[in-house]
Image (cartoon, rainbow, N blue to C red; front, side, top):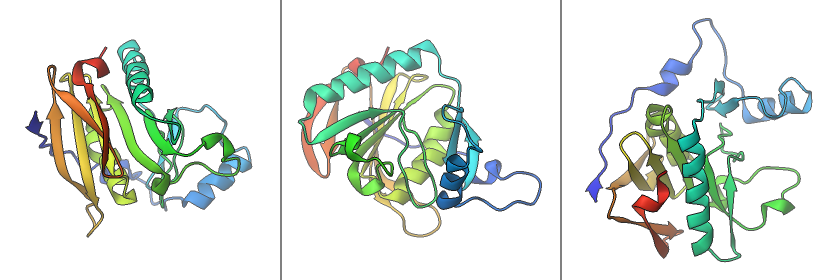
Length: 205
């Protein structure tokens, strides 16, 4: 287990289109969906005001998402639901993390998606998306105050765990980061309570 140190590119800057434009608000994005301007299932995510194409998912990605979901579901009680690739709503984004651990029954949320205050953990399985997940996505989740963020890194075959989000200043960060490799056990912490652990190898295809 080691401390994670990464230096991502500025994805927010790279995402701004070359022509003058203003980012959308979450409300405007929802209005576009209601009006039918965006179809369900389109490979897009709404990140910090911009519509962004999702990365291609290869078979190892699908396998890792399923393994992670099953491992988490074995640990959690009925208070928590493990969602796969479903939207969550923050102040300026609506990302669709590969996994989100949500407090309560999301089937009762008929007029909105889960918000950050209802989420104990988000997970991104990273292959082609590794730089985006370490940079742009990490900043979005930290800014929203989501307490724990995992990156299941298929490229380097490790799980990177970030905690203690800080939204101070214009560069939200997670104050702590650890790397778990084969032979390590990844702690599952929800709202400060350690509910169990998962062998790091069990999260990888």
